Image 1: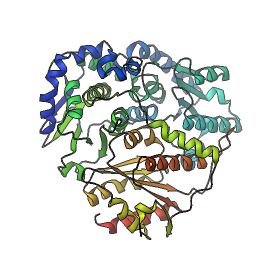
Image 2: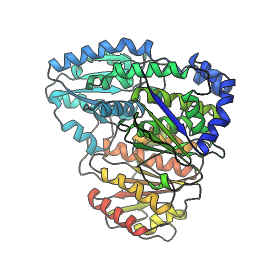
Image 3: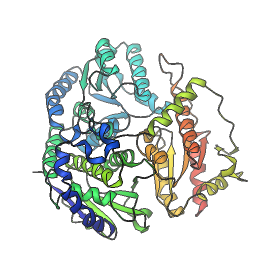
Image 4: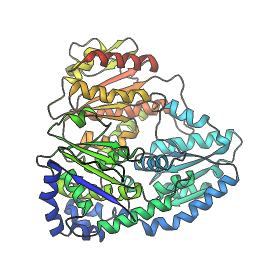
Length: 538
């Protein structure tokens, strides 16, 4: 039996009491169950009509379970037990949470950083199967990763086609190309589900199942939860969580998500993408902030912050102040948060199924790759760090600490800081420590995202949400580069274009952007950490 728990206090409880009765009167629960596309208004109806398959995942997902199990057994018999996933956004974040929670190994490659790609290619190709997940197959990151692995398999004397598994929408260009190429298997996902709602479709299930996770149990819990959430009653947890997220007055649009021993490894990162990409548009939306227990955002009591604590099912945690406490199994929580995000979208008056500003950064990156311009000269160099920013931002700054102070000086009372690291998230993991450090220094919420994967999540909010953010972009020179077979650019050139393109789009939206390039990664990261230690505050 699926167990879910939800409790709200303060502004969150007020929002539940204010909005849930109206949601019940409007029969939102039963209309969601019926996949009614009119719930989000006429402007969203066309998109919603083809994006609600996640509410009933069984018809498309159940038949896959036996196929995934059989393929895993076939591969194991051949000595192939290392699963690498090439995917972006929801296609990688959901399998990462599922496998980490299950305690099974999955190598997630959702980066174009040359060091990250090289590390994935270097580890035991003989026992590797590559899962390529993309709705259309046109995603530049996954296409590039597939090309690199196919080339590496061939050079190692391995039949590449036998080691590549595709997950895509039926009838997509990738679907046709993969079948023509004779790849090991092609799994089709429900085309009526968008990427960030796809955890319980083939995109979440195939890589997770091949890695050894119990995906049947996951699907069982999700289906039980969907039945619970179909009840048009005031104790519907999905309506309550949606109201807490999107219905506070005034809107607390910084949603600080804290894992308190839930056992759902990485769940806040998955929820971050779901919420930010679904709601951050039309100059409104919710900014998820993944934080640690006791983080400054949790204890600060800011009037624009709502704290959501993800607790273990057996926990007796209770919300304090303006907080929400949610607990449940992974499958149950995934269904709950997808449902609640859709409800929050209705309350915010936006379409939770489109992502109009995600394409802007992609287009800018493509333009830079096509033109291949010389990199812009830095504004100045301080030790191992090249500093770039427009004159209005940097003013008279000539050192790294002065540049950081100039950026933080742009931070408003309702603002937030976004740290965006286009680096190897395994080798430079210590950079994540900058997040709580800067939150303490500024007294404002701070998000941390690895590039380019954050472009498929909070990247939508940064451009489409309210103009409240300031942005610290961190890139780094690599001692190696990795070519992309069949492409006129390398991974190093690709990630450079992605970073520069995103900075350009942010600047075009009038957002303050400070760009730091670490000439030597280790020394530059140490210098940045030291500069922040000396910062003290804005």
